Length: 112
Image (cartoon, rainbow, N blue to C red; front, side):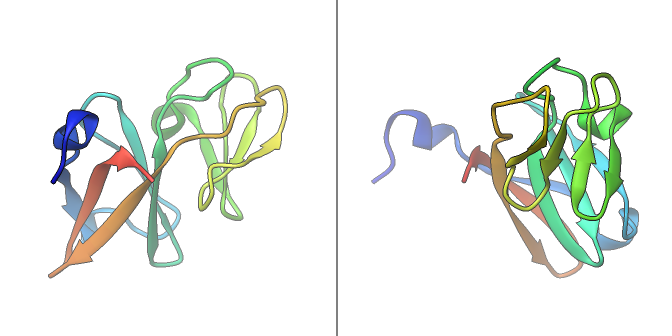
């Protein structure tokens, strides 16, 4: 039985698989915003806001080698784990479960 915050968890359609090519990033609408990434055909999701400066990673970040770099302060995070890879950020990003079903990409809105 789900109670408390778990009842707020839901599966949100993010996009069609073909809408986000490899190397692409997009924001999943909602609160809090979630960034969705396609890395070599595998989809990952993290919090969209940099934990250092609250800039949008999906709108101003740079994705390279499985890491997202904040466009404002250059902090870097591992997209797969949310781990901090370069300062000035010291707090990891929340990560979210991603499911691909029948060519559609969905994100579970409760952090993993």
